[in-house]
Length: 139
Image 1: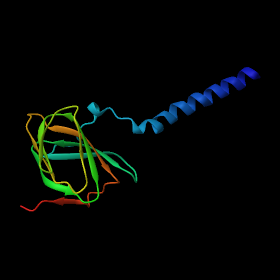
Image 2: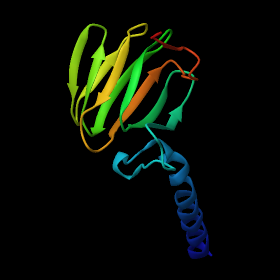
Image 3: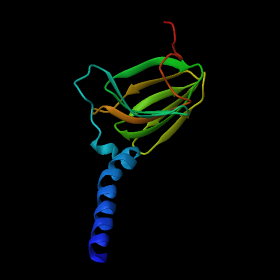
């Protein structure tokens, strides 16, 4: 009788592990395996996480992002692939894989891709980002 009880407990534990790991592992990402869902002309954005404190995206840029700022958000970018020139406020920065850039709220910024491959970045915006605070510079 004790052996059957142990088997049932082991089975329940294994069942719990099997079905709980995917639920708990949803916050772990292999950035190299994340790809755009479809073809795109210039910019493609894929949200990978969001809560009331922050929203994270993988963003691919083939050509450029025009000058804009975020009225209420700070944005942090980690370059995963590609290269680009970024203007942040009055500074110009050459972006390369492995770099991280912090863009304070209300700071103008733009991107011009310089590599043949698209720029691929992890963008973390804080607090929660819904796109409503993006203000484009008038031309």
